[in-house]
Length: 505
Image (cartoon, rainbow, N blue to C red; front, side):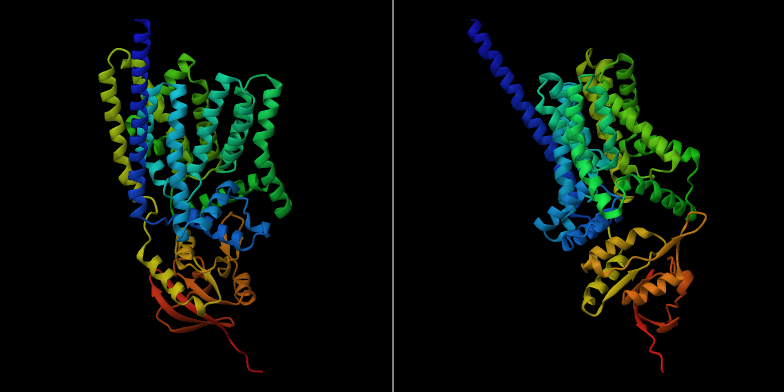
């Protein structure tokens, strides 16, 4: 009788496990279908991701030049993009495939972690929520570093929980490497080093081993920064220098960026991207966990990132980009489900499951709005401009592209043109006393001559208008010692051929 009971228990456990595998597979498949469908029907017109493609191509073509490893963005994602550019064709799809792969692996890793931290059912509902999370969907098909960062972040959370259970020292090495990789995908990952240092306890050997492995990859990046720029901490200082100027540019465009706009930016962003229900119940669930002193690691992680985001936004050292808040959204999703299990779940599972499914269903609502507000299509003028450059690449030597009132178009146009990025010359700029970027007229004409620039992609709405004031109706116009001949129009861009004026002696 005992043997029969044991056999039945094993059979029941096996059936439950099989159902679990099927559910996880179906949810990840749902996430894949949504993301792949969006990928196949859009283009990645994101300025940052296209800028990374250009930088990666420069690194591939100039492997010994450390100067192309810009400190503004962490290097790990560039390594993935470089590998992708060599493996996939056409090149524009490579970073998107990488993001998609990491996005799907994030969903699976989230399940492993949340099953340990909460329970199987909360984990299943949570990854369903992640599969429907608007920003996670979008940035799983855009070639930026978010999904790679979240993958290594969740790997670190899972490894930490396994280490607490098994106390195997080799897991500390894996934990440290996961944290190091996360920090080299996005710089906020550096916060994980002191974070885990606190939670690992007072055992000195554990702390030392974790810290050594966590610092290996950042230390290599510091050496690169020192070799290339003479400053090992250049990567930390770069964002603090650039972001205030980006915010000043927003203000120049008439966009309001006041104290309360910055203070409430992250809650408002989370409501827009998660939906009111998941955000509200996520906050309730987080509050309940803090009150009960449960889920300390995950709740502390949310509070740390939220506090850092708000503080740095107010200080204007963090740009107002909703994609940074995906980390916060991924943590709030399981807490929103946890809240229902803590309130009505134990008394009536059918009611709690129904409410949770309805709440998760509301996450579909923000998807359309986020797709429409994210650069997932190339405007006709940008495609036309890139096509002209591509068709005339053989007669073009070096190119300068002006902005057209918005700088986000320049890098995607470069990528769409498929012209070697070394032929695009950066616009010479200076900074005035107000902290605004201005084009230096003297340096601009000097750059035209020194770099043998033959093509100008100009816009009357861009920064060059104050210097050139080119008339789009005139065929050829002279500015200083250069002739600008109009070759192509695709408003707001006008493409000019540049020739030097030959002086008679």
